[in-house]
Length: 227
DNA sequence: ATGGTTGCCTCGCAA
Image 1 (cartoon, rainbow, N blue to C red):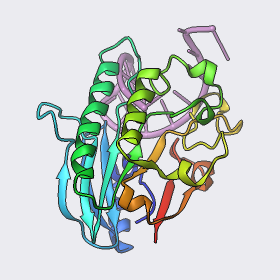
Image 2 (image 1 turned 120 degrees about the vertical axis):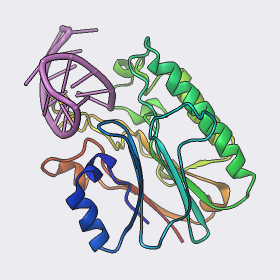
Image 3 (image 1 turned 45 degrees about the vertical axis):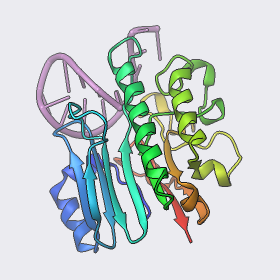
């Protein structure tokens, strides 16, 4: 298992068939036009769970989790939360609190797992091209960052930061205002590892290649290797 | 600068 897929591409049936033709199993939880998450794997998924536990009324397709061998993997699409004066921001914060509660339950199993995806959280000022300009944005707000730190304090490891100290490495560049060409982005896609997974971490790479292609997603892949 | 770009839910909305 390596790349995070941009779920938006899976709306294309031809791509889904192409992925299967390449030997991938695809588990997806999607919503027409809006949210969606997926897991692509070379071996079949076991014990697939769709939806983040903790709020049965939440209809948004932002969480899928399954096992592959001895590894549990979740793909998440954390709410963006903008604008911060709308109900979207408290929804984001509540969603993060549910994720923390669910992570606690997973951690109690003392097994390797990865919570991967678009967190829509820029963890620190070193993870954004202009910290001052983004201070009030839901991706950078202190309330958002505090809840991300809670996940780390529970015992999860930010796989990229565990292996790379350099600042201003990004996974997302807005389509607008030439952000990609200026390398003005944010690091908002993360792989959070349980202690048992972190013990196996041998590499974590942000691959900028796909973002530079025609018709690219505004995100680029991050992958890690557990050896 | 409340701009700018992208893709679907298409002439508005979310990102």
